[in-house]
Image 1 (cartoon, rainbow, N blue to C red):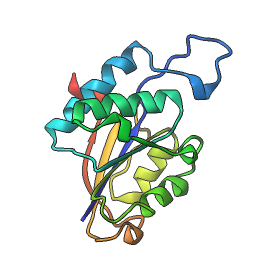
Image 2 (image 1 turned 60 degrees about the horizontal axis):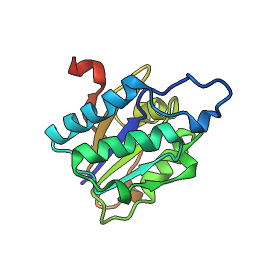
Image 3 (image 1 turned 135 degrees about the vertical axis):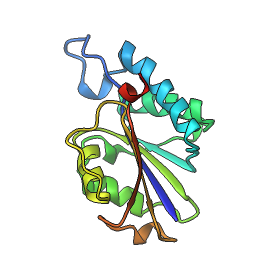
Length: 164
């Protein structure tokens, strides 16, 4: 069985006019939400074998904060340029190309790609993944190459406002 976790980066700052989108960091809320969601993932038993993140500053910062709380070595986070500006099929291809020794894969990316891909994987449907929203699905396969759209089983969808 393979478990795919998709996370949207935490809330980012728009406080510096002229700063490139790629370079925007987390705002105060994002810095608060990402560790809280990491703690929630740990409470749910989430222990990724691999975290792949967009290299955009807000995404990699989110991935690091999630990793810290889940007990994942932040230095082991892999960045993939494709995730910045990706289409759902690009993100899906990253999952399908994962090493089969990886059972739990977490991908930290952006919207609308995260929302669109979530809507393709299982019966679960959502209009918009809020910042720092995290979705999990399982697939009854032994190889990531065999993961298919629509074949996932919804496990959970969590986001900061659910935590109160």
